Length: 123
Image (cartoon, rainbow, N blue to C red; front, side):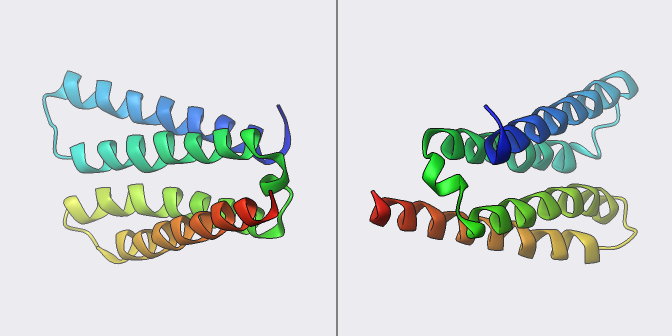
């Protein structure tokens, strides 16, 4: 495995490790205020990005599309802005980063849908 699929799976594993560390920190401190950020990092970072990677591995023609690279770029930007943004929002600091991350994440999913359907047309 290499290329786009490897990048997705490697970053997904990194997101999972950070999410697990955050979960352990919350459990140890008995402060679960950041649970929404933890949950989104697991779902958007670990699960979604890992599924992107598995799809790009299973459909190599899709991973060669320029749009696939753009999609992964949006997904990465979404994770690294959404999850800290949720933490900032929960802490009452600012919602701006969470809003930006939300838009980047939904754009990434819309682009992924486009990649999936375009790759079907090529098959």
